[in-house]
Image (tube, rainbow, N blue to C red):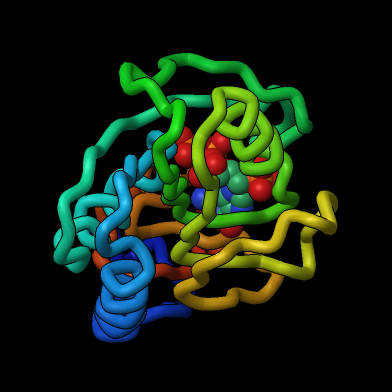
Length: 180
Ligand SMILES: O=P(O)(O)OC[C@H]1O[C@H](OP(=O)(O)OP(=O)(O)O)[C@H](O)[C@@H]1O
Ligand SMILES: Nc1nc2[nH]cnc2c(=O)[nH]1
């Protein structure tokens, strides 16, 4: 039923799965023996977060933060507002931030600085999708990237348009008439 609104599938469920497995193996190797807190950024990262932590074969804590950017519907402004903060103390712990997508880089730039200020032992970023063409914060380079996507607005696997389509099992581009 949701499929009827999709013009093109950009990343299939199989390609997503392969990326998650590859990243999970790398993270397992890099974080073994470290005290790690995996921080998912709501709401978009919820689906990826659920999959990636199950590919990490190590002890870890999970927490979530909900932030929103002031600005237009499809672009963040740079001003980040905390809707729900973490319940976990970060001091001396290795923080892995999990995102669905990095676009301008403003959301993550804010969060990385915040977690450093909270004295995390290290702060690294794992994103399923990266849209490097759109980057405004040029020094925001994710440590772990599933896939690069072109400069198109994508939905599915956690990513929304007006809060819909997060439950699609693939990443796709909407038909133009859906935006009307
Ligand atoms: O790199 P940026 O330009 O800052 O954009 C990336 C942010 O935008 C999306 O979140 P959104 O604000 O749409 O909220 P959501 O996760 O609840 O969908 C995405 O999940 C990132 O958090
Ligand atoms: N749903 C969605 N949210 C975004 N936030 C930044 N870029 C995107 C995108 O392509 N799709």
